[in-house]
Amino acid sequence: MRKISLILACCIAACTVSAQPGISEMQQAQQDLKSTFFSAFDLSLIVAGLFGIIGGLRIYKNVQMGKDRFTADVAAWFFAALFMTLAGVFLRAIFGI
Image 1 (cartoon, rainbow, N blue to C red):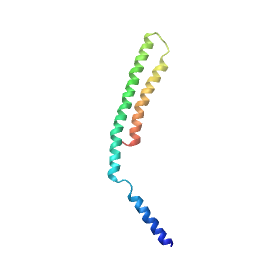
Image 2: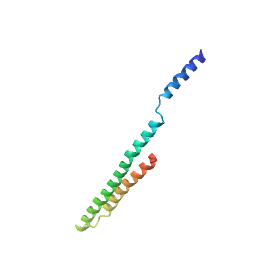
Image 3: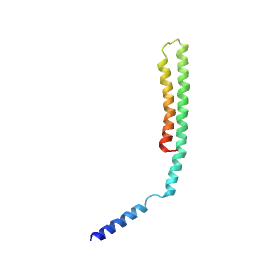
């Protein structure tokens, strides 16, 4: 009785294993991830560039207005742009692309 139930359990397990996606589906999923990820990586670089430009313009305005304390603004805008750049690089490393 035990042998029959063990054989039946193995047959059921084999049927569920064969229902899993194949290699072609996995390659298609990897290709889809690569195509969408590069646009996300480019987007992170574009946003970092925008942070740099906007930050530079705001700091320039503060200097022209005669404000003495703008070092915190420089650091904030610089690290915002650096974070966006590193976020794209980090995601690229995580996904192995």
